[in-house]
Length: 421
Image 1 (tube, helix red, strand yellow):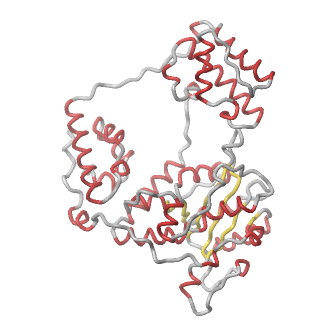
Image 2 (cartoon, helix red, strand yellow):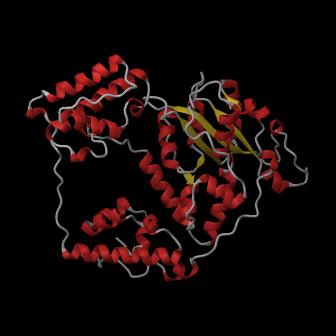
Image 3 (cartoon, one colour):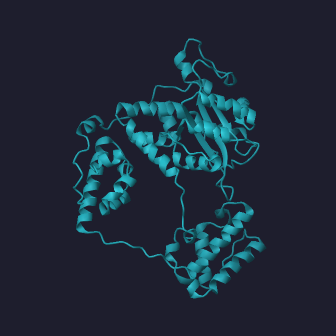
């Protein structure tokens, strides 16, 4: 099938006329001051017992959607684990959370409807998280940059979402270029989120108040932010685009990523190594994994990738690299791993995988250029990032094999590209 077959020049002329580029204005919606977290109330927000969790489950049980964020210890341990689970639940109609010292007027129903209950569940405590998994399974989950959080929830709770709202995707569908959570909170609510705990050890207990505050901030604005972004998407008839994109994220997060055993050691730059140097790099990578597991530290704490790469080159060229932070035992194991690799027969050296491919034909090039032009025209007209509609690699894959369009792109993306089959 040629590139022009099964494609139309304009996916929806009427929609394109309506979805013009525009200037976004800051929302006039203000987060109630009662949602400002107070250190004195942080302890009551931490859930570390089954009794506390039961109370949270009651709140979740009457909610249609729940906002979630996670914190893990990937920067501090060998096998990252779920360390915190922040949850924001809308308060039931007319119900005020007395624990938050709310200052609401009894007649202001709109104000009351925006109240929420923010909590931090401690997965490292002695908790039975199965009831939490079950109640969350039937709720719509609001997240920001959902992919990582969904994978951590699957690892920590065996939880697989069925319906999500990703506020990052929602923002990008509105053409917003600065789509970090901090940027969106500032844009829509005029608030600056505090920084400083991005690299903290979230497995630390007791949890310091400043870290708890940082964690709560990552979830407490998601529900009103989602509401605001969805209203804008409705205005520009892109709400279904959000649904399609979020469903694809759910599907991808549910797939277990599997890598071939012999690919793990191929770090950035390893493709330039051949023969004995590649054998040494593989051995040093395996040595580093053993050391990291024993110390329960991330591999880069043992030796960073660029130093691992340069060490392999150094050993292969006859030198003996050394690092001051190595203990005598670690240094000996490091050198022994290199020695064994250096004396290994050539038959044991890694073989660089061959890349199979064909030179693009004139038809493929023409198809690629046509797709790119359609993408760029749509991006310009709608105020979207071209790569958000379809990255260049995706366009190349489709130009080579049109059947890859469906697994690589969701319907709204295919429609903008004029792909109808």
